[in-house]
Amino acid sequence: MNLPESVSDCGTLLLQHMELGDSLICNAITRHVVQARPKPVGLFVRRTFLPSTRFMYRDLGDDLVLLPAPPGFPPHERYKKMLEWMEASDCVPVNCTMYQDSGYKADFFGQNFDQSFFRYAGLPLAEKWAGFKYARDESIEIEPPREPYVFLHEIPERKMPVNRSFLPHGMKIIWPDWGRHPNIFSWRKVVEQATEVHVVNSSFLNFIDLACEPKGRLAWHYYSRIWQGKSDPTMRLKWEILE
Image (cartoon, rainbow, N blue to C red; front, side, top):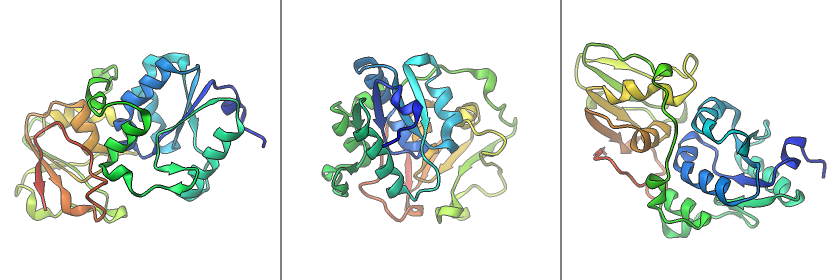
């Protein structure tokens, strides 16, 4: 098999679930692998999330190489392709996904998503918080409005909307603009100073719970994601669950 040069040059290949929320959950796993395995470690990343991932791990320098995942494949086929690369290379493989040689393992060990990630990595779940790290840079963070506002993250295109009846009437709403600000860490100050935060189970839920210290009300719109249950992450902050 002809491997991409960037893959062949790595000492270790690390495969995780590649949505941004999954990447944030696995921050401590990535750092553990970089410390413990042959370097450089190649981490597969979806191109959409390169700005956030590059910023989150910039302190690791040349020890971590971000490998854009192959485009043009549906998710299951994309993971299959990367598993083939891992098998064909001379690198040390580290697979922390539900995608194993036999296909997709839907049982999650009978645990929540993040618990399974850390079990695959051989780490206790407590490392999710104890080992989470990124170098904050307030100069890249967006200045929040002076008046009271709601920070709202929903994903209508994935059929994950927020019911407006749960929002305070007449209050200014701030939505993340990925086109202008593709780095999720640039939204930290806006989140922390919001009067209320309303999110669905996706990247911002995990970002806020891992990286932020919000001052306002935290509302998790649980009803908005139809495949709840084992896909729920374990939370640190006190979220109000809206069902």
